[in-house]
Length: 354
Image 1 (tube, rainbow, N blue to C red):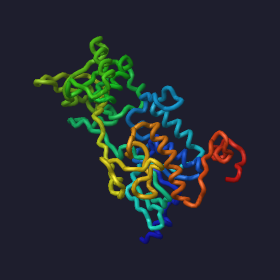
Image 2: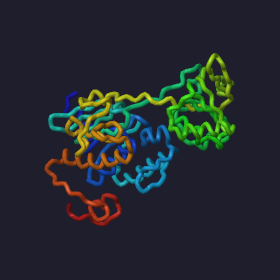
Image 3: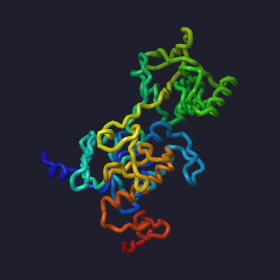
Image 4: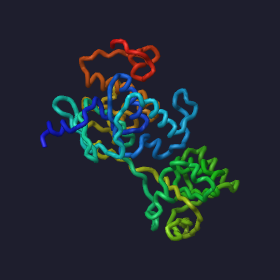
């Protein structure tokens, strides 16, 4: 099949965004304000990236003008904010091919065969594609997704039940503290007595253990006891051969992620410790027309904060516009006063000439 045939079958768009986390979603908004259409691709089956996948109910305190905001709430607000721009979403798909053509546009293809003819690309892939490190014990496959979980989707459905939480990082401690007093019982299992979580969380957990409000065991989950196809208990293998059986209805395993760039590493962009090097004017990578925002990029002074990613998305959008339309003059307009932007947002009347 010729390149021309492939391009004729492809979706033509001004920009493809790789990653539907908060930074990718805000890039849709910033491109929309500039009058640019885009399509967004993510390996997960729902928008939100790691926020929605790993800690949807976890509070975030450093989003401007929102004293506290749940991670899923933030994603929901972003989705509402970008509604006027009608972005194309391609979820459950991984970008497997990306090639810059001689004319400066890009051929992009996904794992499901979706193809794009894109003017530019914004990579907002967080840590890249990722999978949770799994609990590998006999019987775990049979209950995964039902009683063995690697994320908490709706915390309230586990209230009043017996829970085992495995891990020693922030996710494990955060959820142990969150469920304490709401679940019937909470048992925290970690392979050693030292924890990687925030010291304040560890101290609070130890207070609750001392007060008898939750249990903490040092060791590893060695086996699961099933009654038919239902999990009823786990066995924790502790120091010096000691074993403890813990009745439970659900196990949450928070052992971290396997972050990997995947195909991104093969797209010819300059890397620094598995992150994409960008400039700080427009967050363009070493390949003209490919921009990178959020945790996937690196530059002097980089801070991995959502609000920093929002700033990067705004400047990257201007960079995309300049790349796709190099002869077009750029004007900085404000949503409070610009009839053009208000029209694009669906809150104004007839637009004035740009």
